[in-house]
Amino acid sequence: MLKFLLLFCLLLIFYAACQVGLKTYKIRHYRKSKASNTATALAAVPLSNYVRREMVHVVEAHEQELFDDVASLLFQQKTDLQDPAQAEQLQQRLFYKMPGRTTTHIRRLDLGEWSIYWNFYDQSLEYYVGCYGIFYTHVDRFGQEHKLEIAKNLSHSHCI
Image (tube, rainbow, N blue to C red; front, side, top):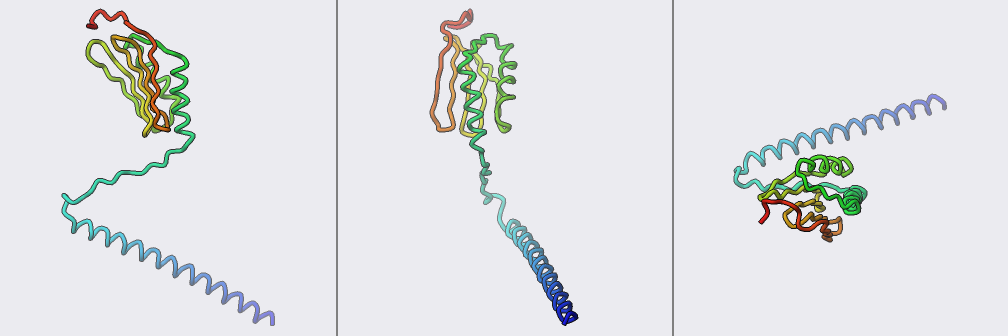
């Protein structure tokens, strides 16, 4: 009886191993055929028929909140830098606090005006210094725009 039970267990283990091996073979075969079908289909389509596909990124809620929190911090501090030489320091100070996929750049405009712009998917923050003052603009995660004006009539001699 013990030999029969042992033989039965060995057959059961052998059967399970065969099933796992068979499924693995089927998956590999399916992936190979799908890859070759895709390559064949792509080769048959003229280059002018390619459609640009947008990549979908999953944005975590805490990252969106973090961007809004950093923008709120800038609004609360009411920073009033007028010297474009200090723009990079402000840019980096806030950039290090923002989510990882945030982009930023400094724009130098006519008449000595400049701005720092941060962007995180649909959210944005801009610090703008112009002839008529310093302005903050923030679009939050809900799509609402917030604005703040800090100083008026800056002492730029080249402003009209």
